[in-house]
Image (cartoon, rainbow, N blue to C red; front, side, top):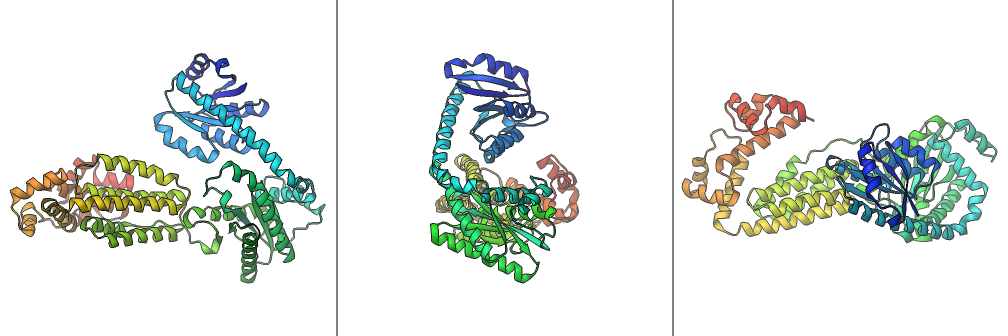
Length: 539
């Protein structure tokens, strides 16, 4: 029988789930009902549990924190999160804690029964995998029983501050290891195919411990040969090195050389690639965790740069915001004017700009989302039939955040740009649509002119105002004045968000000769005065 724990701070929800599920019929037992994550964590410590059903927002310890606790301490427990609509995107972030299912409230008894049946299969699968892994790793039991394991645990506890420093040092002295150098540096070595940038199936998960054992042996051999420090295993699939010595350029380059040789040797022996993140120098053992955390942060750049890395903190610039404004302008112009090579060049520039910024995944995804919206807005400017592309855009935004690497994510964006390019090229094939597109470009390039009018635009196009108004409305779904005001307001928003210009300066920049009228128009469009908008959104 499968043991289920229910966690929700609403007693009515807990009672409803207790009473409406036929637990015996699905071979389950509700072994506990807790009102917050803290209570649930204490329950799991003393009671075996197979499946945890938890809400997100709860006092003392919420569902995300509980998932983190279970992931780190009880990895065999299958986690199911249920949440309200407003919490759903937040809940998806719990994927890093191995959450198996997300359920949107309210949920029926039938739906929850279906989910529980699926989770039973997950429980069975994990138990089978655990048995297989135990059989597979029996080959390395002799290693885990010897002093190397004790040494690894002692050094790991020292580096991560998970154990008392004095206790760790005493344990290491008992093994003949003295740590009395003037400086220390921690490196993390992670096998790429078992990391978060790859989809790890059952077979790979089972072999990861053995491959990490090979990586440890190679690292230990080379570090010992150079008398540079100590290698140790962290968990079952990662190796770390505690380097010690004098802090200077020669020592730093020697450490890079050792790590480079380890990477090459592992590639030769087992044919797999390893990424290495080298932390900063620290002076005392108390600061080792700072070096470790630096190395951990560097390893995370695999998302942006791909695997097979060898980086230390000197390779990375401090994260700063980047502006894609000009490049996105070039991209939208290329889409509107049908210049494929220019479009592809702009996308490549965006890709390189993001990669060189060394930003974290969340920030990189934000820049890709800006690009997707710019592409969609280009199509919106020439077509009123946006339903399919609006839906495609939302799906794409979700897919981009789910990709394991930046290379995969930017590939989806480029594919979307090609689709929009083809669609816009077909729209441009008719004369009326072509004239409407030229009009949009003219507005885009001249919106800052306070004298821009329907007459001046039609004079530029050499077309009558009545005919133009008809075709423009048919193609864009909006009037000339609606598009002009919308363009001016978008530009005003950008200036309010990204500059410290005064309101009257912005009014002049976007084509309003009267700052008072600009303020009235802005509030009509946004519901806020320019000052209120800047206070809320200025970066």
